[in-house]
Length: 365
Ligand code: FAD
Ligand code: UDP
Image (tube, rainbow, N blue to C red):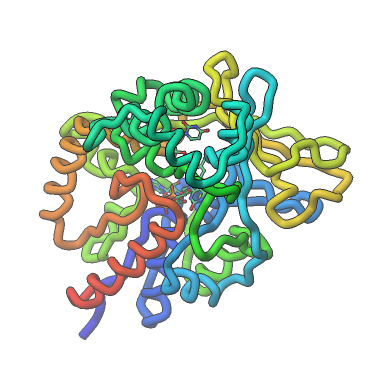
């Protein structure tokens, strides 16, 4: 039986993983990407041994053995545990909030038990929390909410925390120990030669057309199966209304200097500062002794490329409408952060792509 060719729209993690899988089956695969490079938002470029992430800092972290085993076929890893400080009124605090943060903010000593008891006096519990504000208040109370979360969230999303799903801020833990890592996952590392090298290996032997809009060429490929990883509503020409995506503007600086930050990322939660965070890429692959430092500032923006789905009830309803339209299409599969309209990390996108691939093969694609 002759198989239909596979057209993959987008060369980010979702598209590249599915393309690799179909290519490994010996199928005819073509990837169409509107950018002039592969890798989607995970794309990076090397500057003197420092990997500069052109779409903001990307730290790989996961609890999925399946995802690590799969990606390890295309990259080696450099262990890396991400650390973040929050800059508030000129002082730097360990973040996410842990015992060190509590001691600095409340100017007293804590151990696990006393911190637990103290946090009970701080919390304003909503059960269950209906939005991001209620989620943070339930976890840490108003003082820490005002210091670390309210301004950052308002800037990042361009709306009040009350207008966002609780899952947005629930990404950030509260720790009753001195673990100052940003993530808690069992596997935390960076691809040793960068993300772009990883993508080059994923797409080795696959035909990739860069700088090309899917709408321009692919509609002519009648009979092909399509994997679409772009924005969900754009596929349907926004016929049910626009799904909001939050964007960012990145400001890069490269200087002949030693590392400027003690940790890779400094968050700026106050609204008086127009950016949310500054990341120094040297830390990712242990290049803090380099005489060159490369930093990136992130300015949230309502306009620009779509980077973040905006999780809330209204958008979820609209998403469901589009997903119903998507389910009616026999020859198109929707995968990834933009196409699923889900606030996925890279590992979740890879896991999802591997799962969808298995389903499509079962369907006879
Ligand atoms: P994308 O990478 O967006 O790829 C989709 C591709 O489709 C794009 O290249 C796009 O150009 C292309 N495309 C869209 N429409 C068309 C069209 N019509 N024609 C042709 N091409 C099209 N995750 C982590 O795990 N750790 C992190 O530290 C982390 N940090 C992040 C920081 C920032 C600032 C951002 C924005 C995201 C971060 N993420 C992080 C999330 C991560 O970027 C995503 O989970 C992942 O890259 C999504 O992959 P994707 O393939 O679904 O989408
Ligand atoms: N957040 C915050 N203060 C911080 C860091 C995060 O209020 O210092 C909130 C904010 O709403 C943010 C969300 O937690 O959008 C998730 O943070 P994360 O660092 O996971 O965001 P990402 O890396 O995906 O941009």
